[in-house]
Amino acid sequence: MPPFDLAELGDGAVQALIAEIRTLPPSAIPLLVQAFRLQFGLPAEAMVSDYIRTNGHAAFIREQIASLSGGHHPGNGKGAQA
Image (cartoon, rainbow, N blue to C red):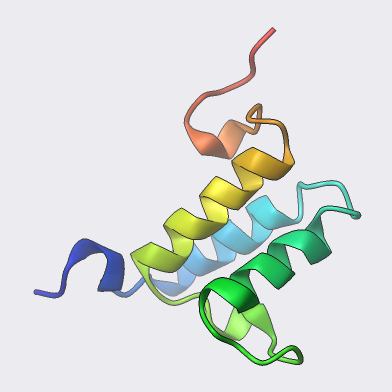
């Protein structure tokens, strides 16, 4: 069994992450995409959705979503905060 970060995501999990990304403000999405490309050594023209494949990718994306949404994103495990 591969380490947790390298375990493959199912198609449903990938689609759920893409849906979470789409809940970000439009101005934040390019920042997440750029950070993912840098983190995982992808070329500038790479379609990030084609490279979301592991638990490590998912964890990175969730961290970015939490950061870009001010830590109040429902998908980050914290829920809405007042």
